[in-house]
Amino acid sequence: MEDVLASVLEENRGIDVSIIMPCLNEIETLPDCILQAQETVELIRQQLHLEAEVIVSDNGSTDGSIEIAEEMGARVVHVPERGYGYALRFGIESAYGQYIVMADSDGSYDFHESIPMIVKLTEGYDLCMGSRFKGQIMPGAMPWKNRYIGNPLLSGVLNLLFHSGLSDAHSGIRALTRYGYEQLRLTSTGMEFASEMVIKATLVNLSRTEVPVTLRPDGRSRPPHLRPWRDGWRHLRYILMLSPTWLFAIPAAVSGIVGLIIFVLLLLNPNQETVHLGSLTFGNHWMVLASVLLVSSVQNALFAMATTIYGVKAGYRHAGVTFTSMMKRVNLEIMLLIGITLLLSGVFILASVFIAWSTQGYGSLNRIRDILAGATLILIGNQSFFGGFLIAIIAGNVANVHSEISKPMKAPYTAPKPVAKTTPFVSEIKARSNH
Image (cartoon, rainbow, N blue to C red; front, side, top):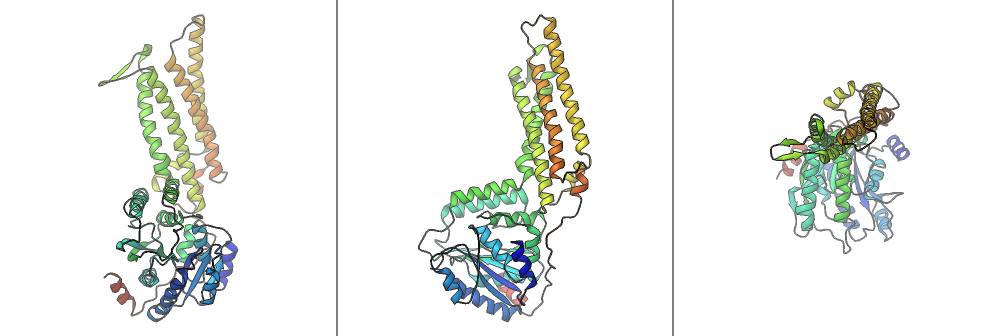
């Protein structure tokens, strides 16, 4: 795709806005969508004094959609791989415009409503979403499970984890600048592309806004490509994968605190005595749980560090103040030292147990807490030692991780941010979109 993008950037052809619609066998609705998009192109020219184009990003249609699109004057680009996200990415990277509009080609969105979104981009926003929940959802346009469960749940989880500030993260109509697109480094090939765009726009702090739009029943006689449960899970898992704090760090902190409390309390009580906390009684069996919690905590903490560093290196995440401050104090040598210290401590505890056992003639032994403590320290030491190498490798084969994550992110291409064009129509269109 980078070759496609490079050639497009050399040949802008005076286009300011590109309207992109992904297509996979949409012959029933595509003609009306193209006509509507072409009307929108003319309105953009008249009202915003911007030149626009219509692109059909075809994902392997076999029903005549391609031929119809070409006959109607749309520019057709042929996507080499299947997938909603892949079709949109290929369409965007084939576009000539600095302002990108994308909307589904099933007749469920009105392309005219993209004009207020373009106005938002000219005002300096990088991403403008169409909000169905702030606009209107017509009867029959959205199944009840999507309207009342799927979309609110996924948007709610996304906003809880990332604070995007957007009410409808999965709308099928949205607009962004090419500058914004280049900062996102999108990779999704499926429906989770919708979540990825909003999440990464939040992570790299692109300016975001939304305008109300209307969702209409689509005009197809066949079932939609969207599969609610399958695609809902794909969205949810992707949201979690882009949130190392919630996926790894918070579970690490919780399990670490609980495990450490139980671990220390049991070790501080000699002669295998039980520990009483109110009505709760803790004995040897709880030492096994404490060991599991501590080992899991260290493992998840390493996962959180690794995935955060990967996100920073990949260019779609900024290292936060807390994480940067922590990494100032952590490098490969420190993690190796911690690992070796814990390993030797564990070996020392197990050796003391073995010596005590030998003095008893290798008979029965009641030192389960000590054995578990030694084994736990050896496991955590092993995790810290080799985890240090893993973190250093992900950071770029450097021991000082902080020096790497503090470097400014490098994008393969950084387009100039579009300059806002003031026209007498902007305030009029903005006012109209608020009614």
